[in-house]
Each structure stands twice: as C-alpha cells, then as structure tokens.
Length: 128
Image 1 (cartoon, rainbow, N blue to C red):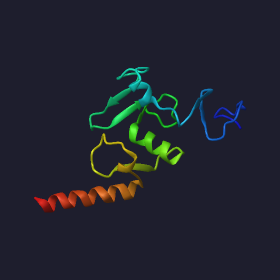
Image 2: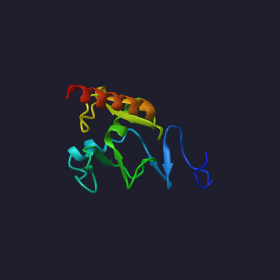
Image 3: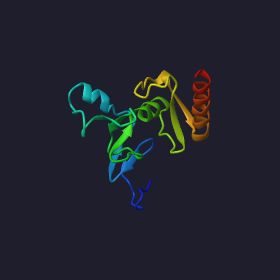
Image 4: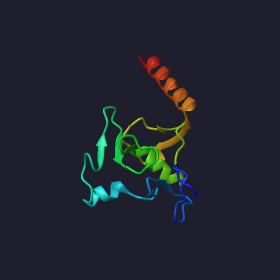
C-alpha cells in the first residue's frame, strides 16, 4: 500500500490510517487517558467550544481540525468501527450537546440532520 506521497508503507495498513508515517488507531481512548491523569485538560486533552461541544485532542486523526476532533464523532466512529465520512453528521437526540453517550447519538446525512432541526424549530414556534 502507498501513502499520500506515493511511497510504500511498512506493516499491516488494513483498517488503520497513516499520517506522516504515524498510525492513528480508532480504538485509542484519549478521554480515558485524561481521566487517568496522563493527559491534561486544555491544549493536550479536552476542550469545550463556544457552542458547547466537547473536542478531544487527536493530532493524527484524518479529519482533525487544529489537532482536535469532536468527541461525538470519535464515539460514533468507535461504535461503527470506521471513520465517518465528511458528509455524515451526528445528531444529539436529546439536544444536549455534551451528552455523548452512544444511545444519544445518531448518524445522519446533512440534509436529514437539517430536516430534523427545521422540524424542532417549527415545534418550538408552535409552542409559543
């Protein structure tokens, strides 16, 4: 198998993603490392964005932005045993953005996710 530069990679690459010669394995649990005190909150661990979503420091994740990935995406990837496509979005069923239990998350297309949130807004307007 070849990497993005066309060079052959050593070892078993099936199921793993290589970035700059290093392997990112989906089963890694940065959150557990933080709980055990191996990683610190903030730059090296967990942060919360302005909208209330939790981000996990994952520098070798193929879809990391500024070395962070949304925790709900990591949890669904681990549950599905595959990386999520950029076109897939995660819906928090109960609407709580930091409730990232597997049973509270649902993978949707962008259009399906938008339809659900439009329906929620309609229901909120009717209630007022």
